[in-house]
Figure 1: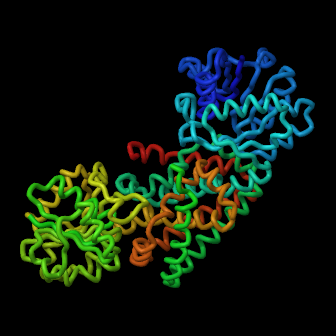
Figure 2 (figure 1 turned 120 degrees about the vertical axis):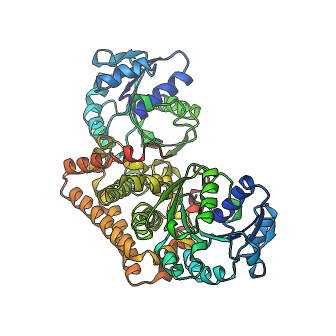
Figure 3 (figure 1 turned 135 degrees about the horizontal axis):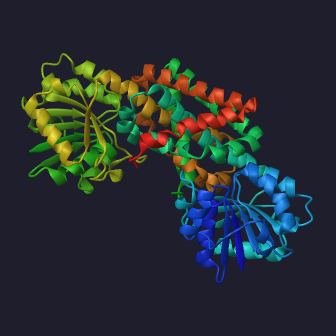
Length: 282
Length: 282
């Protein structure tokens, strides 16, 4: 079978590698807006051939792994060009807009909305690896709208990758992910910004980064090209979440100003319960 | 030689294990306010004997590895009881107050103020391991006030542990560390709090935590008993830092409200420079 991947970064490139490993007799086709990345993906063996509008109709599966604003623009014309038995999978971090955009498309039942909860702070074809998705969650939305045979094929592949499949409504997905992922990224970016503004002495940052900073700021290395459209598409949920986060920080600051360290201790102790919730996650 | 460790948690316990491994013919003595922890440290072999006021005078080195408020209280009477050739090392996350407290002590030259930049989110004797400090920074303050022979012995040991030694003024240390460590902890605790308040659906947190949350919230598992006194002792620096962090978050929120995604992209891209600063740190 022919599998096409649009967007050959960490996410798309790792799916290409996983497909090569797990799907027998498959040929990988790929394209990337960045021609250096496309060449690199060929050189690294992520893909066997280049993909383009001339061969979209020959694909059995196309995976859309590009920033969420570009994905919205390309999804409709792409589905138009795909053959009647092919499956389109998107892997973006927001799900409401793309589900809405494809809602009335005549080939809606050839589309599957997914969000694989996996990634690193690195990007580009060279950051891809075949086991990125092993043991990770795969959120699927509106699965009843996908043709059962195509859906079953996809689920089988995700299971072969040892992903943990979970279904979720697109709106609920976007609300949850604003808290659990998007806020973490903003918190990390602003932490990096605050420290860099103040600490002109990079040697001190470097020497002391082991004391917590390196891990909390890790996400501030993430790609702005990927994250800006996510923040834009999930604006409403993120503004709510960000407001609550700022309010909590302001309360903490107020308690410190009042020297109410008992209340501060209490708040930290309550939050320690996160240990139990995260137990089992690396 | 006899080495005493007061406080047998991750920090003190790991120093005990490192000493056992690297210092020939040494006996390890230890005490912990928590009698279960003291017994556990004996059982795990972190220490060979218990330590108490009756044998303080027999120690060649005493390491003070307890919360910073308790350390301040115990340091002066402890130094009184130590013999004239023994060295007291403290390892707390704040340095100004302890340096000030011991400034005029007749045995000031038998004290060395240190801050090993190492740790995990776990605590207690069972979390200790001998290689915790390998490759990590060791900040030393006011080293000219420590007797040269005692100072040299300590530096030699830190080098044997493969620590990267750096000198810093206590006030400067407390300012830097507020940015690079204390803020990260507050940011992480409040992130955990915000998500837990909103996300009653623990299953969703768990499923999505791989998307950045697990790493940014790691520090929210830290011990409130250790961190409350640190926040108290470094109040002034932390309030400044926290104010700047909140202002940056408010600005980000305002830009999102104004839908100025170009400015948001710009801010994230500038912060990406943190990659270069952290290059080489795990």
